[in-house]
Length: 109
Length: 119
Image (cartoon, rainbow over all chains, first blue to last red; front, side):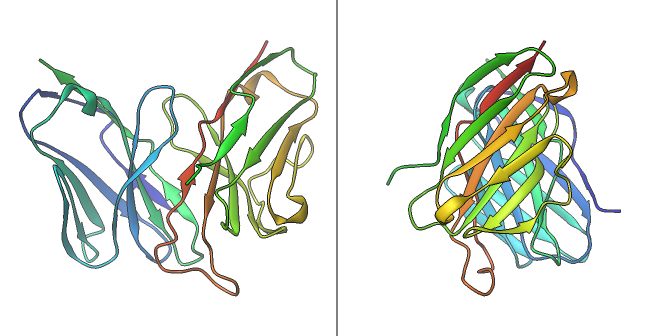
């Protein structure tokens, strides 16, 4: 079967750095997405990786290793507004998105 | 550019009643998705349309759920009759898609969702 694993919950301090990991086992691979979802709101697109390596976008970076079936989302200079769930999703060989359950990130002052 | 629109935002019904949700995708987006998201879980794809044709409805409970996308733009999702376990947020998303195939990225953009409570 297809599976996406992420930690259920993480806690970090305002101003710090946090890394949210995602491991996947899917039928084929056609890209990995990270979405942010604030409580009661819809997911919003953060990043896309299809090749190995690091993609940097402001305070957020996303890394992919296809051989290891592994990705992480790195958030720097954490702000209170970064408190949200972070969803990892992989596009499989049928171009369907397989979603993880999300990681709830709690930021403390 | 306007985002994905959904209505209603909230709906409370009793079990065995019917309910319908509406979605208007981003202009020019060929692909439309309906997802069900239960609290604490990732979105679960119910149905995917490419223009007005169904691409994937393998996880749609067809005995009670139906969806249509007439004219390849707006879409409605209906539940009839509703069960307690249908309580969830129903998300609509759209993506550009490409006629005859998908661009490699084809990012999905989500509407605000409809929170359904079945009592």
